[in-house]
Amino acid sequence: MKRAVLVALLLLVLAVLAAPFFAFGPDGGPLLTPGHLLEPRLAVERVRERLSARETVVYKWRDASGAWVYGEEPPAGVEAETVTVHSQTNVLPATPGQAD
Image (cartoon, rainbow, N blue to C red; front, side, top):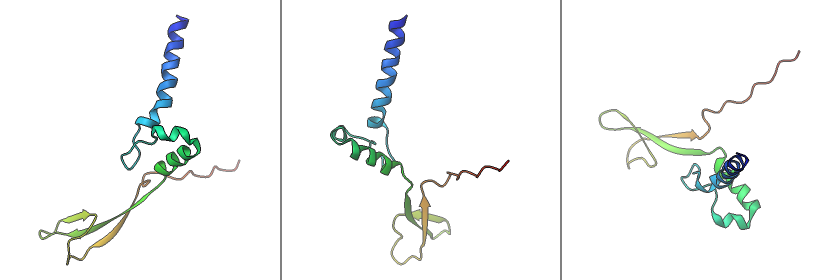
């Protein structure tokens, strides 16, 4: 019984350590690659960079039927509005606690 618990615990630890090599960041690439094992400091910086807040600029314009269209580049000769999209739109700041 003890052996089964130890094996299960070892497998859990290995899964946690391997997760960053299989988890995808915001740009679709893995958070870490095997090359990062040689430079742990750079690996930590890379994970922080990939998980940090980002802004993306897209354009919004109306097509011939009047429907809104969004894209990376507006068609030539079309008046387009710039829209900034924040990656952490749904993240709410913590509220301060009340004094007793």
